[in-house]
Length: 617
Image 1 (cartoon, rainbow, N blue to C red):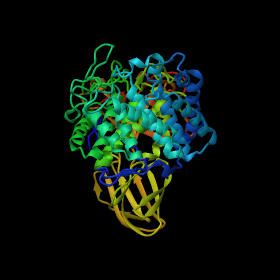
Image 2 (image 1 turned 90 degrees about the vertical axis):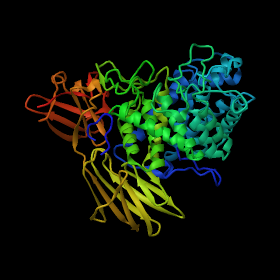
Image 3 (image 1 turned 60 degrees about the vertical axis):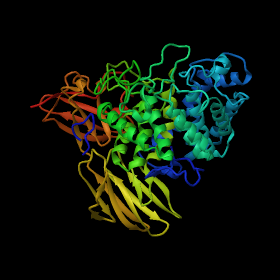
Image 4 (image 1 turned 135 degrees about the vertical axis):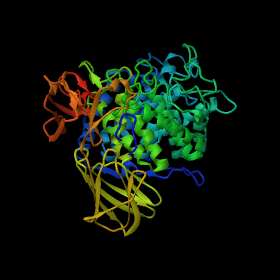
């Protein structure tokens, strides 16, 4: 079993590409787009319903009524009025719009689509004649545009491109796509070989340009993304009029091919690595992949929390030194956990190695999911692993990247369930759903039923449109010590390759696979170099990390102790926190209750901790 850092135990392909022959990506696996995946799942379906009924309305209300974000576009179109908020606030509108686009895939809503069209019309009206669009500089002085690499002009443009591509693919409407093309062409008229150098202060444009290339078939956008990546590490970075550029903070201290250690701002790192992966896939840049392999080891083995969160320091919203993982002071920005999902999915596509999906799942169920309340209306920016009872979700933030990030992430989770390669179908996540997967000129319908993450039984019914020879590869999570596989009721011993059980079969309608994963509760120790967790242990069951809240443990919270003799008894409580599996720890001296980490701070205020004091024999 692969040892994780915190354990002693062990392009967005939603795009219908227009790329031509000779431009195919060098990937082993292509993800099955979530537009083909209809989730019907007791755990996720209520959250997706809350996204439609609560989360998106909250974001829309904040953007339109509580803040000046949409007013900025209206003012920019008129050329009058002030800019309100932070200089990168345009990005929140774009991310929320992307979330609307994804919601429309499986929940068509004419009123919601009309709202998106209204926003897009305001964005188009705010675009300058030369293609430039950014409400901050339009309202504070266009003469200052492109003078400060840390003013997020390309960051905002990247999120606009992602929203534009998503909305075009969902509705066929290309107004914002055309705005994005004009902005990309404007940027390329200013920057590029033989023109001005530029290092974006906050990465995002790099991966967005690849999506624009995939959608338009115009290779110049891929080339521009590659050029921007190659700008790093050559001394071009500068903060313009405001202070001193810190190369490490901005991932600008060395060329990306030479990177070995994650450093600086965590979210910036994730977007950079996603851009590197996307460009490497089309440019066949093996040196990029080599660098990402080194970086992944550094992130996961030395700088990742048990929750899959990254970024230990509030000071730089990022990293300090290896194994510095404080709990109460942990930053673990929600956006960074979502970024871990993005990046690890891309790494899995290159390799077919389940270790990347193991990390993706850890980040998704713990670090990212904790970022939103069970009601869907409050958000965490920071996700610590311990609290004195004074850390709570909020309806919005001045810097609202995390609420808008969650609004686009949740409806896209179907992207991460399945993959397809020449010889195999890959089942990465266990979520109840029904999907149609194209296989050459044919297709296979798969229905997945499960009570995961509460239960380790996963039933898949395979319905090809005609009998077909194909491998089905089932991910065996690193936390599952034993498992069984039955095909049509008969147990099979499937070989395991890179963490996937390989079932090679001639599939016919109605074939059934039953995978049963061991989901026992584990006591987990941190790497001994993590000083913050010396003399402590954590609890994990399946993909879920557990925590202890004071509200469940009025008397036991301060004196709770895990021992080698502790009994860990659990049961599902449908009346608690929208239904959770609780774990009661008991020994001769103490008794206390633990709940899934993602569900904390949804009741009365109180203390919380993931790592519990431990007393060995």
